[in-house]
Amino acid sequence: MTPGVQPLIAGNWKMHGTLAEAKALAGAVAAGAGAGAGAGAGLLVAPPFPFLPAVAAALAGSPVALGAQDCHAAPKGAHTGDVAAAMLREVGATHVILGHSERRADHGETDAVVQAKAAAAMAAGLIPIVCVGESEAQRLAGEAEAVVRGQLAGSLPPAFAAASGIIAYEPVWAIGTGRTPTEADIAAIHAALRAVAGPATRLLYGGSVKPGNAKEILALPNVDGALVGGASLVAADFLAIAAAVRPGG
Image (cartoon, rainbow, N blue to C red; front, side):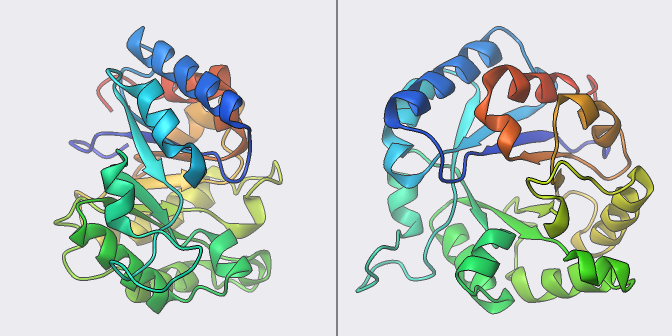
C-alpha cells in the first residue's frame, strides 16, 4: 500500500448475471460493507449497463460506490449502442472503467480512444479507472514495463491525477486464467507506474485476484487495491478480498 492513499477494491462484473442476481449481489455487498467488512478500503462495483439503476438502488445508504464498465468519448450524438459519461453520472455512477484489455481486444480500442474516453469521463464528473497491461508474449520478451509505460503515456489525459484518476494494472495473460505474476513482478510494474503517475494516484492490481492471494498482493508496495473480476461475482469472496486490506494501509 501507499501511505496516505485510500485503498480501493473494485468489482468488475463484466457481462454476467440477471437483474435478480445483480440486485441480490449488490445487496449482499452493501450489507457486508455496512457491517464493517473491508472497513480499511473503499468498495466499488461495476455491473452491466442495464443493471446500473437497480444496483444503485440496492447500494443506497451503503458505503459502496457504483461504477460503469465503459463510456463514449462524445457527450451525445448518433452513436448507436454507446453510453455517454453524463448518462452514467445521472443514474448514480461515480467511476468508470476504461481501456480494459477486453475492450482493447474485442473493440479495437487504442490508447488515443481510451484517453478521449477518460477526458469525457472527467468532464462529466466521473473518476476514470484506466487499465493497462501486457500480453504474455510481451512479458516473455521482456517488454512488460515498456508496454505499460507506453499505454500510460497514450491513455491518460491532462489533469488525470488532479481528477483523482485511478490506474489498474492487469496483465492480459492473468485475467480469468487463475494465473498471477510473481509478487516481485507485480511490485516492479507498480513501481514503474508510480514513477509515471506520481505519489497520490491509486494503483490497483487486477488479474485473478481472489481471497487466497489478496493479502500478499495488497501488502506489496504501490499496490493500492484491486480490480477484481470473477471473484467479485460472489459477495463473500469480494468482501474477503476487501478484508485483506491492512487497517491503516
